[in-house]
Image (cartoon, rainbow, N blue to C red; front, side):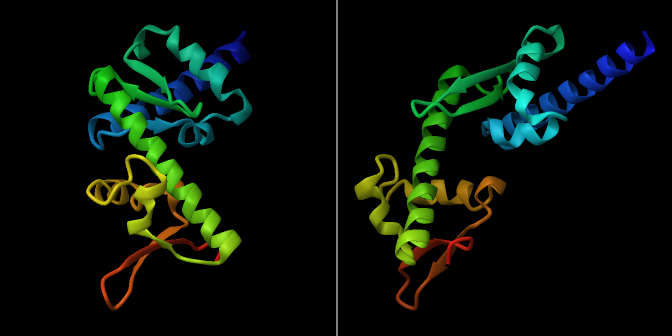
Length: 166
């Protein structure tokens, strides 16, 4: 009986850590929390979805909501800090940043080339020249994209590259 109580307490601590991460991201950083950032908080990462489903059924975590992008990526947010409409906009931005990093990593790995920032809008809707700086601010400050770096040449042209591939 005591072992069951201990495992329930451990699960409660995991739920609290996950909810805290989501709430901080939503409130302080006004951004969504990706599934990959939550997985390390769960003792058995392959059970992260089951853990989150258990949270959804618990009264203290009803503010934790999820949104899935058109590419199938799952993100979480606190609906006390972010509205559903704002979460949809943020999810679109996440998709754009994901496409940017996919392109940069591919260019670095396959072409061993820098990716010109000004070229991204031609391939990725939402990454046009007038929107790219907002995406770069988030992307370069996000631990999921720690391998992506920015470099500027002597004429002011900016490029991205992946340190894992170059």
